[in-house]
Each structure stands twice: as structure tokens, then as C-alpha cells.
Image (cartoon, rainbow, N blue to C red; front, side, top):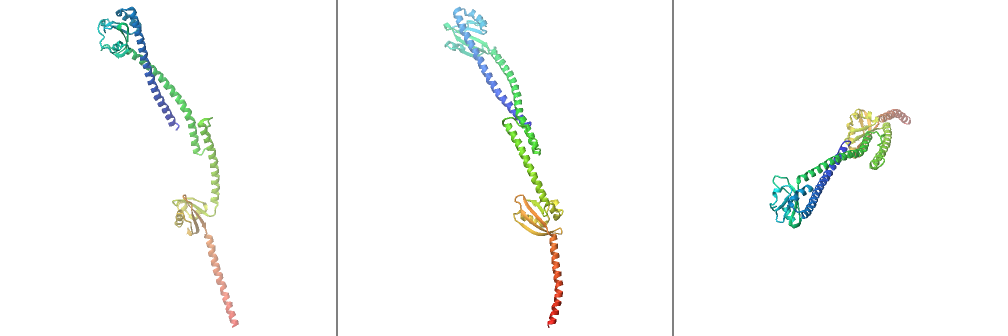
Length: 365
């Protein structure tokens, strides 16, 4: 998380900045280009109308065209009502020639402003042409090389790209600072969680003053305290159970669902001999355990390793079964001695009683 989350956030911010920035840059560039063309068109239209006014006052279109071209910074062409060129600021040799079927001129003759982009000659660059109607059926056409417009647009685009580059760097820097501010507390809480998982409950996370991270940090701190308390209680209970379990005089064995020994107290060790160390039960006890694992209650008195063992097996549910062993070897030995004593005593008492009975019968007879 320490690196991947930060990287994912940075990549996400970077992609968002690039996508949004590219879309915004494209929209701005298109808008500026349209504004540039609209401004150029508006300027040429206004200049064409002013040229038409000057032509009405001054006359002499062949001499007026070059002078107006210097003032407007454009190529000025004056077309008469008969379609012949009356003046041209760039090529005087075209004076007196027909203009032909120029689209922009035809539109101006209908009383509208004509606009188009085309080449005036095959070996020339495309021109942006604006034609406006004038008095006496004349048409004033102004031309600007499209290359000038494209150069201006390219300069605008370059400036936008440079500005966008600096903006991108600034956004990346701010994104890094923002992502670091988010991931730093998470990294600290992750390290704290790892220490808690290892059993170190004295490492509370740093608590933020506010926000969701502060709530999470306080929750982790509270959780650590609760876990520490619960672990302490469980440890005390475990130690108490261990003492009680070890102090039982009966042998207690716990087996899992497969019948393997998982727990046995000290009293069970001599009854099971070495089998318990190998996590196995002697064959006589396995039958009882199998019955207990099937959910039955089983009791039997067995002889294991020369000992008389009374065994009781009970199921523990899904975990397995419990086996309680009582060493009754001494008890059985005492019972055997008692029976032998009673038998001998009865025999010894029976002999004098028989003699006395015989003497009594003789005397009475």
C-alpha cells in the first residue's frame, strides 16, 4: 500500500490532468483560432468598406489601390461594374482584365460580403479573401496571405502549449503534495496495524485532529486498547485453565476430528506410555474415540501397558472428542487382595467349626 496506493493516485491525477488539460487546450485553441479568423474577417470587412468610401470620394482606382494597400496592410483589388479590374495594389498588369467567376466577387455583386480561401495563382500560397460591395456597382476585394494567419495561430498554439506545460508541472506538484498528505497517515496506520498483528499493543496510531482519517485513527486506538484488554483476560483464563488442567489426577486427552492427540495433561502421560508423544492413542482407546467422534458416549475398562484403566469418551462437537482416564490398577489390586483374604478366612474358619460340630454330635449321640 505504501507505494502502490500513492502511485495509483498519482497516475489517476496525472491522467485526469492530461485528459482535462488536453480537452481544455484543444477547446481554447479552437476558440482562439475562430476568434482570430473572425477578427481578421471583421477587420478586412471594415477596411473594405472604408476603401469603398475613399474610392467614392477620391476616384482613380488604379492609383488609389497601392496607397490603400500600404495603409491596410493587405492586397487591394478594385473591380468595376463590368467585371474588369480597375486597380490592383500588387499586379498593375491585371488592370483591365476580367476578374472571372470569382465566388467572393459574385457574392459582393449581390450586395453581400463575400468570403473565401483560395489561391489567386497556382504558385502562390492560399489567400483569405473578403469582397465588399461599393458604389457604382464596383467591388472592393482585400486579400491576406493565409500563411500569416497560420503563423499567428501557430504562435498562439505554442504559447498555449508552454503555458499548459507549466500548468501540468504545477498540477503534478500539487497532486504529489495532496496524495502525500492523504497516504502518509494511512502508511502510519498501516505500520501500526502490522505491529498490532505482531502482538505489540502499545503502539497507538497518531490521531489526526479531524476528518475521516482522524476517526479511523481513533477507532484503531480504541481497538488496540480493547484487544490488549481481551488478550490479557484470555491469557489469565488460559493460565488458570492450564493450572487446573495440569492439576487433575485423572488423565484428560483431547483429540481432533481425525483422532489425533492435540492435548494431554501430565496425569495421562504414564497411562498412554510413549504413544501420546507420537500423537497416537493405543488401539483399545481408539475404538472408544471413534465412537465419541460419531456422537456416542463410550465407557470401558481396559488394560494398557499393564495398567487397569477406566476410560470415558465424550464428543466435543465439530472440534473432536475428550477422553478421561482413571487409573484403577491399585483399586483392582486391593479388591483382589480383599477377595483372597475373605477366601482364606472362610477356609480357616470352616475347619474348626467342622471339628466342633463332630464332637457335639458324638456327645449328643
